[in-house]
Image (cartoon, rainbow, N blue to C red; front, side, top):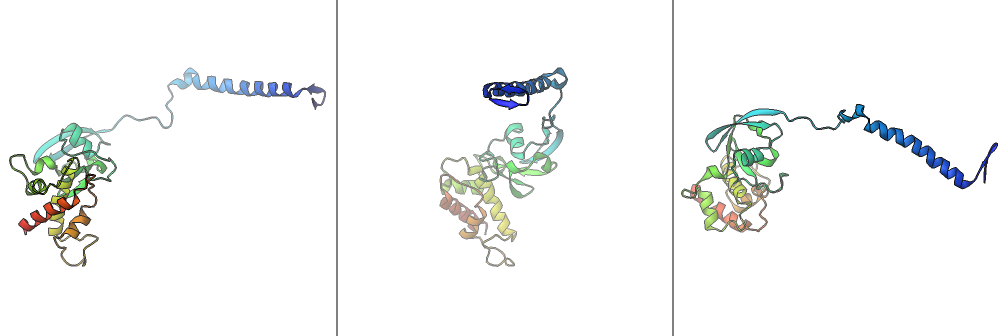
Length: 220
């Protein structure tokens, strides 16, 4: 039995009184949240309508003007809007290289780049390198040396391989270049380092290096 001045109550009565007080506080708050005044009030984190922009891209020699949500990646613009599905969506986090394309002569991960960033620019995808009847030398070398197995990463591998040879020809060093002031060499060590961002889950790396070596030898 608890004694509160002139009021005496049992522990059971005290617990009941506490529960009733908590309910009395909670019910008005819940009603206030459901009141008509709050129904149409957006929360601070509510989504906003998308911002749309006109984007012009020169893709594989053809000019395209698209109306895109400014958050659209270059990868989604290529696949979903231009239906160039040769460029693959792998991790969508820039970690596998399956989406590699060449933008203004430089290889990039299309999943990490917004389409609006390339407005007016030139983009080359695997579809722009060659055709089944007229393969690019790198495509032909991949076939000859079995540089693919499941083939999912192959478009990105080939685009990256073509760009790698061009980087070496331009004298751009890598982390394994012995002398940063000297022109890098066309060799397997350079190829492996520069291609390290392109993951092949089937493990065809040796064959890919062989294909690149053959094309590099021809060009030299």
